Image (cartoon, rainbow, N blue to C red; front, side, top):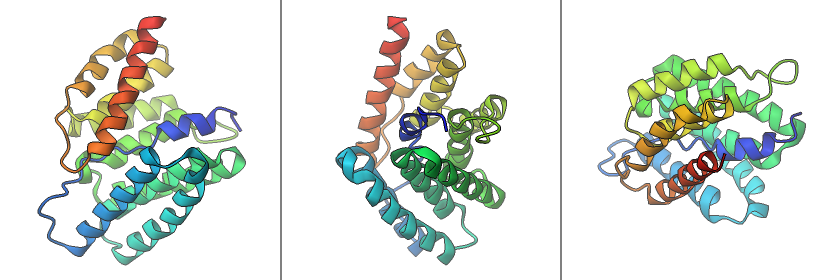
Length: 216
């Protein structure tokens, strides 16, 4: 297992969604919104020592939601996000089994509706492909990551998350000079209703990556 997997996956939070919190009409929408809020609190406002157990508990809740609404992509996307985040906190071989689980969930979401939530399943799966080690330990594949991340960008070109994660991919594949415009676009992304916690946290990550690029 790549020793940096825990650190890398923690960033993949793949809170890559622009879920509309206002005006939801169906029980599944309300349930997904609640799951999203729980994730944000754990990811950005919970002490690091407590996150693994809380993400583990939330993963059970997310799976139950997906099972309750088997024909909907949105619960599956969020289940994948929660499991990926749990993997990031767990680290080690246990993390690898969890990211494989998340990969399968994202693929199922794409099969149902890849365009749901502005293509967030493509973005989240792409992040896994460039952060997880390649064969024989894992399924990491930089070319596949690029393909998926570009699909997400095509569906949500102004979004904070697809721009940030594509920029991070460019940095990690030694194309840091190409990453700056995407980071600048991420900072200019419109605020997402009800996503203040996630937006604030992501902008901090965007600025940190910009500073890293400028320092090198």
